[in-house]
Amino acid sequence: MPVIMSALNRCVLFKLVSKLKTGLIHFKRFGYNAPPQRKTPDSLLRVGHSAITQTTLSTMNNKSRMLSVSCSRCLSTSTENRAARVKRVSVEGNIAVGKSTFARLLQSACPDWEVVAEPVSKWQNIESGTSKGTAASPQTTVSNLLQMMYQDPLRWSYTFQTFSCMSRLRTQLQPPPARLLSSEGTPVQVYERSIYSDRYIFALNMFELGCINSTEWAVYQDWHSLLVEQFGHQVELEGIIYLRAPPKTCLQRLERRGRVEEKGVKLDYLEKLHVQHERWLVEKSTEIHFEKLKRIPVLQLDASVEFKSDPEVQKEFITKMKNFFNAL
Ligand SMILES: Nc1ncnc2c1ncn2[C@@H]1O[C@H](COP(=O)(O)OP(=O)(O)OP(=O)(O)O)[C@@H](O)[C@H]1O
Ligand SMILES: Nc1nc(=O)c2ncn([C@H]3C[C@H](O)[C@@H](CO)O3)c2[nH]1
Image (cartoon, rainbow, N blue to C red; front, side):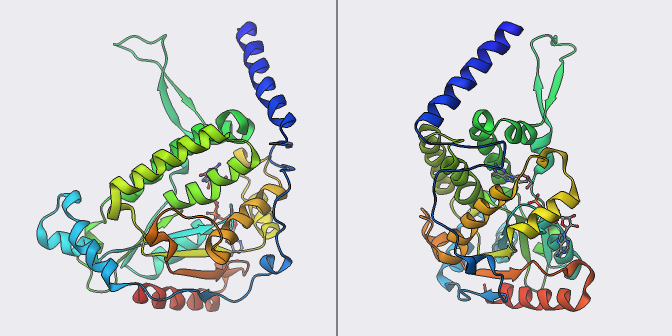
C-alpha cells in the first residue's frame, strides 16, 4: 500500500511539476492563482436590473421541435404534441448564487412549472463493486466524486466532468411529467444547470486553470458535441435564466450553507466562474458550437437581493418569468 501511495504521489507530483513548469497552473486548493486572464471589468460585478436580453424565439424552431422531439420519446401522437409544447429552460449561475432556492420559489408559484434538480447527490454517492466481493455477496464501496474533485482537481476534474455531463444528459432526457402534458397553460420544465454549463462554464474553466489538460479537453469536447448532435432536439433548451450576483455574495452564501465538500472553495475560484458566466451569457464572447444555443434568449435576474423573505421581490421575479416563458 505505501508503495502504491508513493507511486501515486510521484505521479501526481510529476504531473503537477510539469504543469507548473509550463506555466499552466498555479494554485492553492481552490484559491487558484491562474495564469493571467482577461480582467473582469468592474462593471460586470455590478449587478444591474434584470433584463430580457433577447426575447424572440423563432417559431420555426418550435415547429421543428414539434416534429422531431416525440418520435425518440416513443409517445403516442397526441402525447407527442403535448410533450413538444413543454418548454425547456435552464437556470444558470455561480455556485451558491441561489439556484435551488429560486427553483423552490418557481415550483411553488405555478403548477405548470416543473423543476428538475441538479443531480449533486449522484456525484456524492458513486457506488462501485470491489474485487473482494463474490457474485453472491458483492461488496460495494461508495465514493464522493464531488469531494475528490475539490480535493485533487488535477486528478479528478476530467472524470468529474464526464460524470456530471452524463448525469445532466440523463436528467435532460427525462420526459415531462403527466401534469405538464395535460396543462392548458404554458408548461415549462426548468433544469438546474445543463449540459451546456457543464461545458461552457465548468469544463472550460477547469481547462483554463490547467486542471484538465489539452488532450482531455479535446476528448471532452469531441464526445460532448457528438452527444448534443445525436440527441438533437431532445436536449435543446428554449431559454436560459441567469441568476447573477457578485462572487462575494456567492461566497457568503456558500459559507453559510456549509456544504462540506466546498470548504476549500475560495473567492478567486468563484470570480473565475463569474467571468465564465459573463462571457457566455452577457458578453456572448464564449465560442459556442451549437447554432440554436448561440441565439438562445437569456433572462437575467438580480440574485443579490434577498428574495427568500421578500414577497414583493418574489412577485416581481414571477412576473418576469411568466413574461419570459410566454415569449419563448
Ligand atoms: N436571494 C437570497 N438571499 C439570501 N440568501 C439566499 C438567497 N438565495 C439563496 N440563499 C442562501 O444561499 C445558500 C445557497 O443557496 P442555494 O443552495 O439555493 O444555491 P445554489 O445556487 O443552488 O448552489 P449550487 O451552485 O451549489 O447548486 C443557501 O443557504 C440559501 O438559503
Ligand atoms: N467542477 C465542476 N464541474 C461541474 O460541471 C459542476 N457542476 C456543479 N459543480 C459543483 C458546484 C457546487 O460545489 C456543486 C453543486 O452545484 O457542484 C461543478 N463542479
